Image (cartoon, rainbow, N blue to C red; front, side):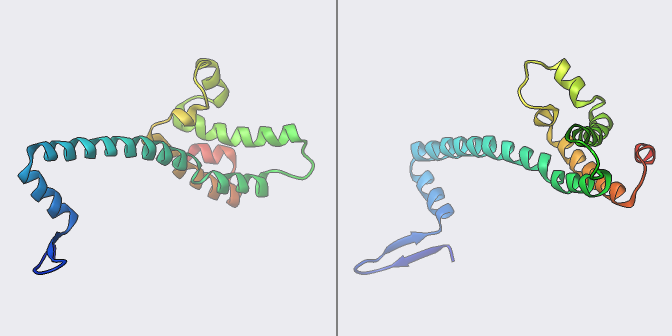
Length: 153
């Protein structure tokens, strides 16, 4: 029940907040306008924070399992630190080329004034695709599927 009325001492009328807001906005046009403006302000603030957070989470959702698969399946103990970095970069660029059409280095060269990397500037749709591609690539790596086979898929 959204509305309660009690008589007597400590009595009064109590309503669920949405009903109370509607009643108050019916009584006062100024209050209704204040509510609408405040709601819009809060939603804009929420979207600004949520939008950034969702994008960052999408960018990293499968990153850890992808890098773990690379570490466990593609990097022998005999590689140097530079060679290990090259293996990780090659796998990342495989996905970058498939999704964005360019490598991370090419993107940096074309966008020297932008902070971050191409994934920081990707839209939501691209980040969802990237998360799915990382998941698929993790499976391919774990199954020992060659890079050429991966590119064909």
